[in-house]
Amino acid sequence: MPEMPEVQGLVDFLGGRITGLSVVRATVANIAALKTYDPPIDALNGAEITGAARHGKFIDLTTTGPHLVFHLAKAGWLRWYDALPQTVIRPGKTPIALRVALSDGSGFDLTEAGTKKSLAVYVVRDPADVPGVARLGPDPLDAAFSLETFAALLEGRRTQIKGVLRDQMIIAGVGNAYSDEILHAAKMSPYALASSLSPADVSRLYDAMTETLTDAVAAASGKPPAELKDAKRRGMQVHGRRGEKCPVCGDEVRSVFFADNSLEYCPTCQTGGKILADRRLSRLLK
Image: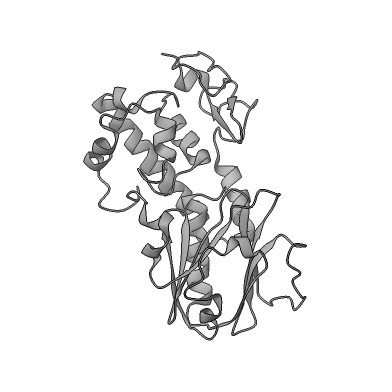
């Protein structure tokens, strides 16, 4: 799933590449992906693109008409073309959810692999009209997101810290991968309760989150969409590296598997050498 750094990389690329161009045509190939009907998708046709922005993990293309907002979900991606193919899209027979043709002949597809389709496209007058955007918590890389702000969000939450970091209504933009990376950098168990963290723990976690995300955004900056996924994988210390050696201490990176995803962690760095039970309702290991 693309998270804040990759989404910001896409926003930077699109903002630099398509600002000033006009939408020639927006074609929906998977009608289930389009979540709005007013304004209609055709309202984008002829509109000039004036910029690109990020709201959590949502991408917002601003135009002289409506906003085109989309969320790539777990298996979605953006495929860019300097010269957009002229092939006819056949709904139901393609991974393409949306194709956007631009006035200089370029364009992009929003694609989604697999059978579980969650990619979402919105055509709205204001990005706040998108329910997921309206519910977002603060952005951890916003200049106003201070240590005090973070501490206030954690205070009294008897929730595992891994879940807190992933909850978009608490903190916007962090998902499964970067929450693993942040917790590894902070040397903290993913099962630690947010309410149990000491002021020193909160400070360490805040610094780890800020540094991890800032570095990842910098690594994604300037890369075209085709290179962002590989850049993300290369930057991971523990996420997706089950069975490999922790780059900090050399211990084996372990996983806990859930119904539709997994978390990765280093026992030596994060749990005092103890192995977390591999089941959803594992108890906190102190």
